[in-house]
Image (cartoon, rainbow, N blue to C red; front, side, top):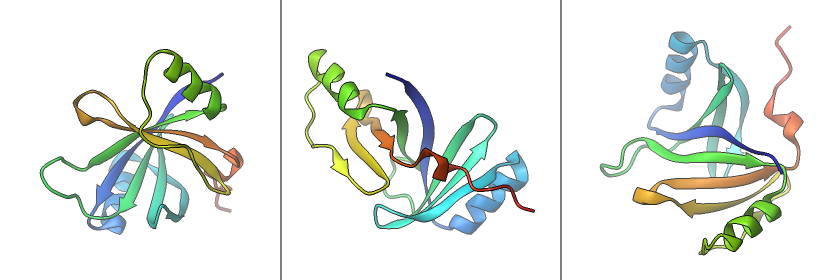
Length: 129
């Protein structure tokens, strides 16, 4: 079973400004731009990692990082492994046509998304001609 840190997911009060900043200042490249979980999400590659920009302004004083996304090729096995190690899941895995995921809370309320993508090739858009 493969497990990999995939992305940090950040809130943005102005998605275009955030994408422009990351693209201009850090050479980020948009690889995915669709609605997911009820809002526009833009996935940007920065080097070997990704940032997801969520079209929703930050709330309260918790900052702009919403969650860390941990990708696996076998979500059921990862959940079973964590349960065997004593982790109690509060929510079931959610199934969507393109992915499956479950959100968990880590120490200090760190929100973590464990997910399995059904169409990993869709995470990369073809290079512009």
